[in-house]
Length: 114
Image 1: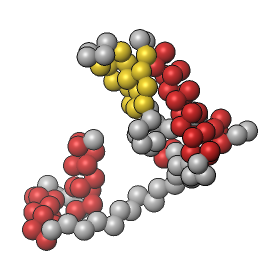
Image 2: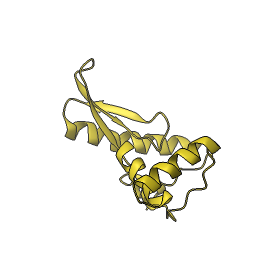
Image 3: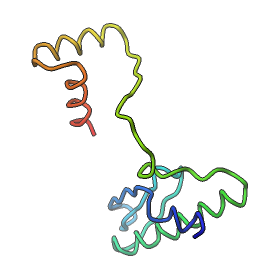
Image 4: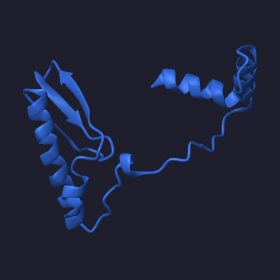
């Protein structure tokens, strides 16, 4: 199985409707600049599979590394984070008021933000 085939269906896809283009637009965030469109969602997704294949072939032809899909990566759940001391204090204060740990408070806020 080639890398192209292996990776073709594992990248995350963002599908949006473009009123300006009157088409469904598919963006592949893990492959910078890889996007396509179609008149229907199904057509746009099929075009995305082809676009991913062409993108990966282009990387291979230039000897560049193929990005590993995020769905294939293992995540520990730990994020080293540096923030301003004043923000740290404000977050800790709000976490205490909410009777939560700082980690839980930040996790809840991040979930709401995405």
